[in-house]
Length: 152
Image (cartoon, rainbow, N blue to C red; front, side):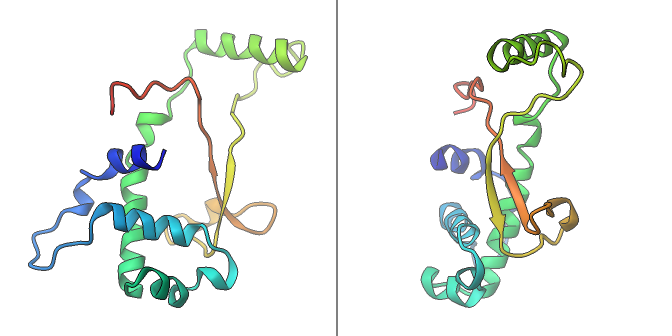
């Protein structure tokens, strides 16, 4: 899955520059970003991440900014409203497997995902990531019917 994400973002313009000092490879930037996201508390401190990753605080902050920018640009590729037919299929599936018997028919359908706890409040729209548990979180949601064969 990580290779798929890398493939989808590696050509994003945010990773290009016209400087004499090139950016670090996209795979290194993504790895440091994901490493920091996987830490919590003291382990997510920039000082600790810089020592483990062998880079500077600025590199880590920039890599995270660029990676999130590139990932966010994929939004419309993975998120779109269901058609009327797709909604009906989902309603029937929920009725069949969960026994709601039509009680929720006009609700929203979402597949539960993994919660990724962020160490700090994101700088852009930070309050949107705050949860009832008192954390700043991302919720990774995947639709297993997604066909990536035309993208990769």
